[in-house]
Amino acid sequence: MLRSDDSLVHPVVRADPSMAAALTAIAHAAKRHWGYPESQLQEWSPQLTVSAEEIQSRPTGVVIDAGWPVGWYQLQPLGRSLRLDHLWVLPGAMGRGIGRALFDHACREGVRLGWQELRIVSDPNAEGFYLRMGARRIDVEFPDPNCTKGGLPVLLVHLGSIR
Ligand SMILES: CC(C)(COP(=O)(O)OP(=O)(O)OC[C@H]1O[C@@H](n2cnc3c(N)ncnc32)[C@H](O)[C@@H]1OP(=O)(O)O)[C@@H](O)C(=O)NCCC(=O)NCCS
Image (cartoon, rainbow, N blue to C red; front, side):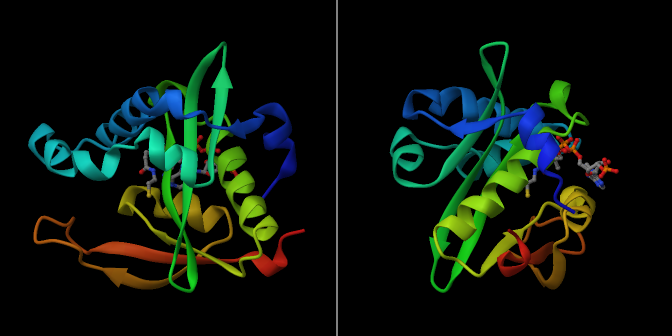
């Protein structure tokens, strides 16, 4: 359920490649927030890391609060789908509508770039957020043997319904 007032309260701007370390730190802190053991976080570190080159070459939006990034997203075209590769909010900034503002911006960016669908492979703890945003579950993935019990929900958003 998109609500454009959150993107007014929390403006989303294009991320700068110089923010790579700060955005990587947010991704680690947000994932840690779900209570995964440090050994597991270490293993996932490559997926939680963003490079300056990726920020430069992929649509990447960030919310800045008091001069510091507090949440960000990144999109990546993969085959026939546009994929939400990252969506992370700093734990201290969660629950204030920043996730919604980022998700809203990501969808609008997808529309602007001409995509029909946005695909998300979600952390199980975040699925409720995506469902709340209007996504629907279409599948479950089991990417590796350490994968959370029950797998990772795969969700889809039809961008055609977004104006
Ligand atoms: C999931 C996440 C992005 C949500 O960001 P947030 O800024 O806390 O969310 P918002 O404040 O914008 O919440 C918007 C709505 O979603 C709901 N919501 C937020 N997180 C939720 C969750 N985990 N489950 C169910 N509902 C959730 C809120 O209650 C709110 O509902 P409302 O419409 O009644 O107001 C954030 O918790 C996060 O970064 N989590 C850790 C990292 C992660 O797993 N990211 C996803 C990777 S796939």
